[in-house]
Amino acid sequence: MIHGYLLVFIGIYLLGTVFIGWWASSKVKTTKDFVIAGRRLPTSLAACALFATWFGSETILGAPAEFAENGVLGIIEDPFGAALCLVLVGLIYARPLYRLNILTFNDFFKMRFGRMAEITSAVFMIPSYFGWIAAQLVALAIVLKTIVGIPLIYGIILCTVVVVFYTYFGGMWAVSITDAVQSIMIIIGLLLLAYSLSDQAGGIQVVLDAQPDGFFRFLPEAKPLAVMEYFAAWITIGLGSIPQQDVFQRVMAAKSENTAVKAGVIAGFMYLTVGLIPLFIGLCANYLYPSSNPADTQMIIPVIVLKHGSLFLQIVFFGALLSAILSTTSGAILAPATVIGENILRPMLRNNSDKLMLHTMRLSVVGVAICAAFLATSKSNIYELVGMSSALSLVALFFPLTAGLFWKSTSRIGAILSMISGLFAWTLSEFVFHSQIPSILIGGGVSLFFIVMGSLLFPDDSHKLFLETSKQTTT
Image (cartoon, rainbow, N blue to C red; front, side, top):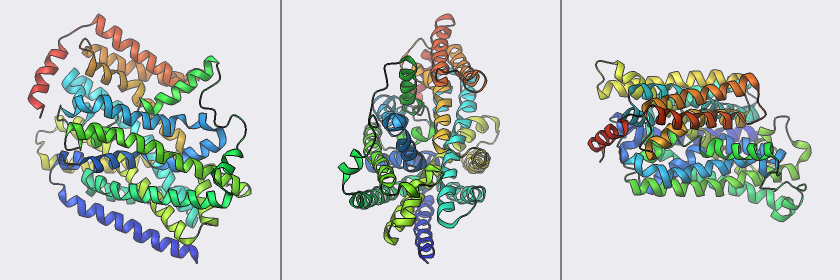
């Protein structure tokens, strides 16, 4: 009977979230509203949007499982690397990008390096989201399987339909407003669960003392391969997610460039501090119920809450978990759909009116979700799916973006060579040669080499043209 009550309350909670999103969608009149909420978000909403968008399946389900198995060194990528990314975006990238008054990262590549760079960056960016979205769909399906026993594949299909409906109508306004509500629910739900499990275990110190020697080691062994793997973990999301459209949209949705800077830094610190709570919850679950751990370690926390938590705790936790994942998925689907509409299809259409482009972006939402759902059915490890997503953008887009912003000598040929060569080297290392050296370091190193050498060997006047163009768009 408790499952029935839980399902009813979760259904009401999710319907309330969807209603907020539907109400907010009435603000969507133009593509600018749909993509960056009309650039009107205050600091609180912008920071919550950044925090809640990333605070999804990997942080609540994937990271605790990785932490319980490998200790602190197993979760450098998330939450530490993810928090680093948000802080760097706020401190270094938000201000110069905000001034350009653009809708996508790929608009920047077009302004700085031309149409070919725009297309190349868009083609590389769009697939990088499929792993991220697939991870959220897997997480939603895992939760449904835990609660009611729905097979994983049917759960993925059901979740895809729900998220597409929500994202299709909502856009950034809906995502931002629901993110603020969901941020509060996430924090409350996790704190209540952490307090309950900690109290049962006899206190925080008891749980921490029960961990094996070296569990809380923060630095790697002084071995070349260990150091390289450690560095790769920091930069996978820490640098790899900087040139991502979902982060960009939330920063650009702020009402001013100062707001955008503050939102990034605040979100980074929120992500790190709140992100430690599910890690502690995972340790408590292992300590209290070692014989109850499921075969899939990603399901540890949901199973423990379902078996040993009160009805109130179940409602709060699963409501917060589902809404957090829905929010993350919605934002992740919106990002590549925006790029498809703005950077791939708009230049091809003769009639590219704002109304038509808004409709095109909404249809792109459906296509992106379907592709991600297929990926979700073939690979079900949340941590791996997210890591693969960020790796793609790091090896192809990070150095062209950074050099294009801060190095005047960066040329068109250098940027395109960097994108193509970095992705090619990473693909060979990851899937063909299976190198012991982290593939992301090989791909990133090759990308950096070609952005420098290509720009030095093939200089041009792209920076001068960029300055002239940016003067026309700067607000």
